[in-house]
Image 1 (tube, one colour):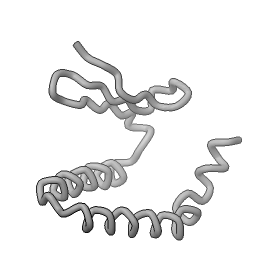
Image 2: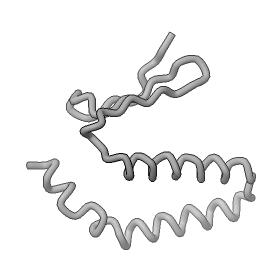
Image 3: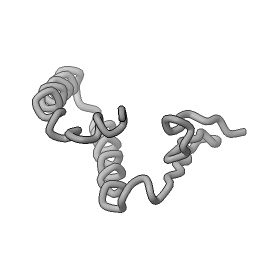
Image 4: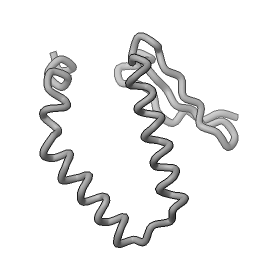
Length: 89
């Protein structure tokens, strides 16, 4: 039995993630994202998997989280420029 975990906003079916047994099945409309961006998403997942396998201490994980949060606060507007306003129009 499958269970839908995430569906794209506005039911446009840009992407969805379903839980099927012990796997997550991701379906992405090719017009939604270019291949380079998709490869970056999967590379990020691979890095997260390696981090989990490394079993870093809670202190190191906390430092990592704080660095990521600080970086995102400083760079968010630059990366989302034009995206947020375009979605709201």
